[in-house]
Image (cartoon, rainbow, N blue to C red; front, top):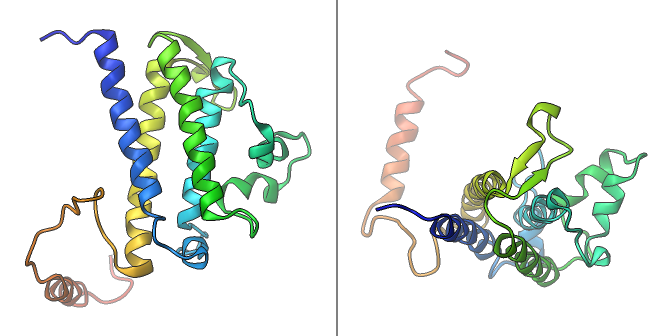
Length: 207
């Protein structure tokens, strides 16, 4: 069976949407504190992943194709990061929510970004040209097809990060609502103990 460009776009968009929904689901039911707590030495946190995903889609489905985000007041950190004198703090602002940026606000922004990004996907052909100015010069000229693949891969990577962070937060696991993709009746405590026992047979620092 031959896949038409329209079919190919629909397939790519479906995988993109699955990654989006997985990220949003991982902050549902959490308190503001739980959603913001950094859970790695480099500060990775669940709400920050959602805010970063929104920033990613604004850039790749917006400016790359000459379609500026129409509500800059919703994402003031974008202008701060683009300023010529931007410092490290400004560049990191997309990776965490400020105290006055609630879960509801960040998720609401991300859902609006979906509509914005989907308009780009719907209105442009897969071979529509774009320009990613922050990539290496030899890679900056792209197509919508390439960007759909790139962003989908990035969001699924972050969804994997979110899986682990959410399990650390409250033990909740799952692939999507109604399908946790976990083996029923399996003794995960015993399984984890077995893995720990194997690992501990090796001295620390040994390679």
